[in-house]
Length: 267
Image 1 (spheres, one colour):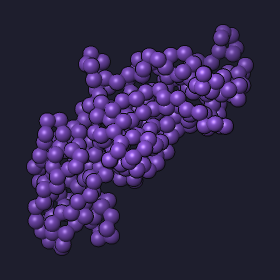
Image 2: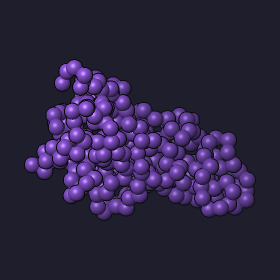
Image 3: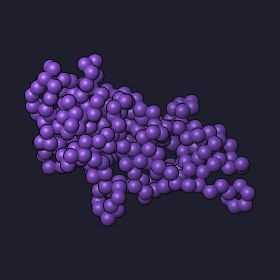
Image 4: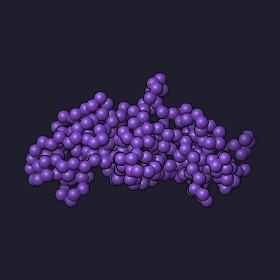
């Protein structure tokens, strides 16, 4: 389209703050996050561009009061290239493994564990290749056992991206699907490696178009392990999904564009 009706698009990255996260229980595929195309925009998948999706799960344990405790992680936590690494002393909320302890006795572990907190890392971690297998904690107050929680990037299950028409029929179509461990070990900054995940070329054409008010969902499936992406302390959920955004053109009708795209999804 040329002339006054041509509206330039721009590529933006959808981060975790753009998604509404939902709880998930294992056993069937479920939507764990959703974002919606604004009513005045059209999104298009920029095929070939790298994308990141790292969901997390929660584990709980107990640190013995006034003592040192080794917490075995089940499942083990991937050490992710593009996130901080606790085994290197990077005790931040951007790490692929985050630990919290209950600092006020209310039963909710919500204080970040570092190497200087009342319940602290000793700096000793068990590793198994590219995974953290255990973390050693020291409880320094001696005021009794302490509840702790860990949020680790998922290594099990299948994580997908889909587009979905929220109207009649709730029709959806898969855009990308990878094992969670493949997502975790992707390297978005190294196109020369075979570990970079990029938008699938099949999303060229109408398949990659998301009209106004369409949803983009993250789905997860595993038979055993749940995600914890909806938890307030799951701050290491990492999402960076590029889309090309453009305004709806004056010669376009949103409802008609939704109808056309939906027809291609059910064809």
